[in-house]
Amino acid sequence: MLLDIFYPTWCARSVYELDFEALYRKGFRGIIFDVDNTLVPHDAPADERARELFLRLHDIGFRCVLVSNNKEPRVKSFKEDVIYTDYVYKAGKPLKKGYLAAMERMGTDERTTLCIGDQIFTDTWGAGRVGIKTILTKPINPKEEIQIVLKRIPEKLVLYFFRKSGRKVPW
Image (cartoon, rainbow, N blue to C red; front, side, top):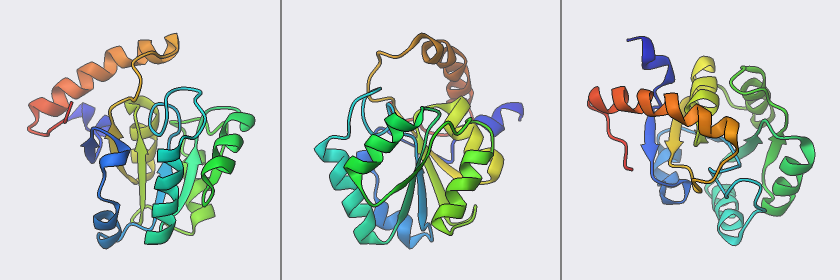
């Protein structure tokens, strides 16, 4: 179907509810993360929950890269707070370049890399274009910038057909 290119591999209510040990057992070794509204509310600094997540991922054995369309100061400061990760700023999502750069930095490929984000038309579609499995999360905070609010309208249509195809969205 035409909309399949926008469908995530899996959906989760929150990145903080995922079973990362199970994902590691499935063969994933690298995780690409969106930052805003995936890990923390838009423009918020890293919180204790995010710092603990990246420590846990490091202990499991994952390599991680933050891939964001934001400017460097935003992404770099978040990376410095969570440690054990790298970053790509001004990634141009959904273009392939940010995802390819992240895999190169992690030493992974599309079979061993996972992308987690809250937006279909940047995170899910972009990673899918490279062949990376994706997890779409519910946005943390419903208050968003206007350009994102406008993207949420067609996202609802994609999610409608995603559900209609028998797949589950936990929100």
